[in-house]
Length: 92
Image 1: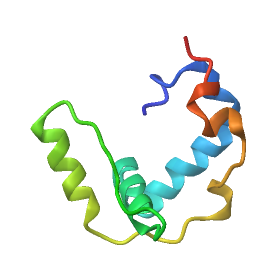
Image 2: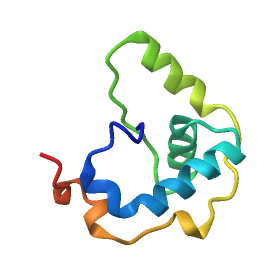
Image 3: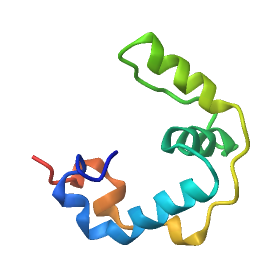
Image 4: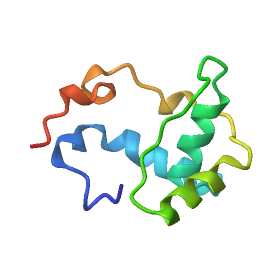
């Protein structure tokens, strides 16, 4: 999500977002590619459910599957339930 479209609620994790976008740029990945490849790299995940609005979005998701996922740096991990659980997001 573009920084100008991100709800203010998420500003408290700005250093995490900064590192995320730097890591994406360094590895020449889109957020979609990194996210999809991360999910399918997990042996405990046997299926991934995605939602699409149109055929173009579906094609982008299919294309994002192909390719490698570089090692994920420890700096990108968080255990903060206020970020991990969408039920906690105060964005309205």
